[in-house]
Every structure is written in C-alpha cells, then in structure tokens.
Image (tube, rainbow, N blue to C red):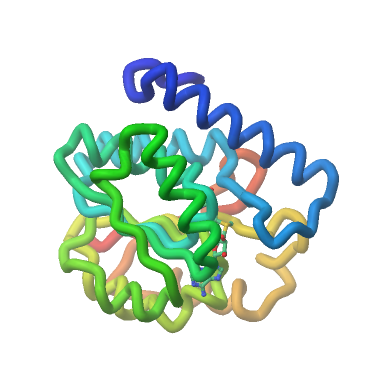
Length: 207
Ligand SMILES: C[S@@+](CC[C@H](N)C(=O)[O-])C[C@H]1O[C@@H](n2cnc3c(N)ncnc32)[C@H](O)[C@@H]1O
C-alpha cells in the first residue's frame, strides 16, 4: 500500500529511503548504534489506519530513532490538528529524526524529547489518544502506570513486537511474558495479542 492520500510524494520518497536503509541494515546484521530498527511498513500503516479511524490528536511515541514511525504518526496528527510527542535516549538519533521531519514538512506537529521514557511519560499531557511503544518492554515497564493513567477512555497503547521475532522474547524473556500476562489481567484495560507483519504485538484500549 502507498497511502497517496496521506503522504505527499516527497514524504513517500523519504519513507521509502528510510525503509530501504532499514532493510539493508537488517539483512547485513548491522550492529551500528545508529541503526534505524524502524517499524515494519505494514505495522506503521496499520497504526496510521487506527489513528485516522479514531481521530487521534494526542499521540505519544516511545522510541523515535530516525523518525520513520514518527512521520506516519505526524501525517495523521497534522490532518487532525493534533501533535506527536516522541522520545529517544540517543541525541544523535533525535537530531536525525528532526531533520527527517523537517524534510517531510511535519516538524511543526512534533515535540522531540531526549532522555529516558519515564521522565517523558511524566511530561506527557493527559487524555492521550494513541501511544506507540517501540523502545522495548523493559524500558516501558517503569512508565506503564503513568501512561495508562494519562490514556483517555477509548485511548490505545500499541506495543511493537520489538526484538521478539529475532530473539524469541515473547516466549522466553520474563519481562515480555510478565508484561503480556499483566496486561491480560488488567481490569482497567482491554488487551489483545495480535500478529501483524510477521511479528506479535500487544494492543490495549482503555474502555
Ligand atoms: C526500535 S527503535 C524505534 C524505531 C522507530 N519507532 C521507527 O519506527 O523508526 C528503538 C529506539 O528506542 C530508543 N530507546 C531505547 N531505550 C530507550 C529508553 N529507555 N528511553 C528512550 N529511548 C529508548 C533507542 O535509542 C532506539 O532509537
């Protein structure tokens, strides 16, 4: 899919360039700390669909990297008159993402934070519509209660299956397994484990 009604040709070209680089890095097994580790295209597009359908205006993202997912979320936010707040602990990645969002003419709807996810969660506005978690479950655990409290009724948390496919984490890593089980038992959320683009993801909605 190419979403011509959502992305301009220039945005599409930038997304394709980032995705090509990401795929090359994956195939070469790159250990470069600046590696993109971008969302799968299908996952990013699914998020766009969810954000559009729910009219998401307050969007938060954990794990900016070079901004591949941020461009997707920001394109929706721009249409909805909303904003994306995004965090990454690596300043060089945030600088790179900022340049990419500027090139995509979307920087004005994005607030970049550099630092740890917990501090970021505390700074987030209330009544969040959509939260993308793409920096790993262990990093998200300390911020989870804060994010949940800031979710609006009907708001969605989407957890990318980061590293799960490659390392079998969903089945073997106690952090991942415990988080999935806790989510399933959480009476304040309705959650679902979903296979998408060959990976397992978690979705949780505040009823
Ligand atoms: C999988 S990548 C994000 C990919 C991005 N969402 C995309 O689709 O292009 C994960 C990112 O999370 C960042 N990160 C890891 N732990 C973090 C933490 N505790 N706080 C903030 N960022 C973190 C890493 O620096 C990395 O850039």
